[in-house]
Length: 279
Image (cartoon, rainbow, N blue to C red; front, side, top):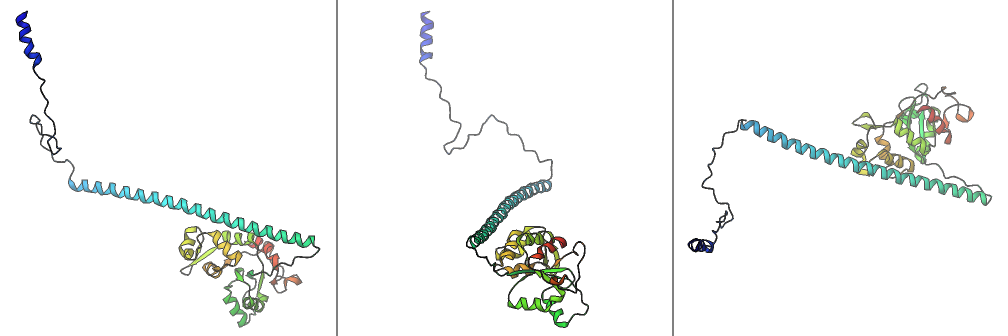
């Protein structure tokens, strides 16, 4: 037993074997001398096909990114349209409340509030070319009233009032309200693009041609027409003249003035009831 203890003692005192590091001083991994490297086999698919697949994947990735960006931009634009429409509605309500307040104050003081003169008119042609004077024909051409039941918005001033008086036997006109303007543009509005009559099917179309004036949606057009803004003429020229129907029940008498029971002439606020029938 003593001999075995003497033999085991030097074995226990022997220091443990140190493992060699697996990396070289430059940080790269040491090659394994026992590992048998396999020869790389040539790809079974031709290189041309692999390149096409790679290009197809890259194209798909790019198109998906573009679609995502377009979707995000569209969402932002919709939000912008909604914000503008909301701001205009608040403005219109404020104007109505102010008008109502002035009426109540006038009534409390025992006076009458005289409304301001109208600055916007809607003109409809009611008669054709029979027995028409060349001067009247020229005025109707300037107003873009080329056919029966054509209609346009006109900004009232000294020059346009003179033109309306000259062509009065062939037209009827009045002062449209906000509701009528909206219905006309939304239901009968068409744009004039490259000499063609194009329906206003999207706000993108409006932004493309009127975006440089800060008009990007239909509500902007309604606001410009209703308030006679600085871009009124741009918006009015952008729109094709309105093509309307005959009123339900027909016209009364085109050769008599409206105040005499006929159709032509100025009917002031009553134009809204007529436009409700012809839209």
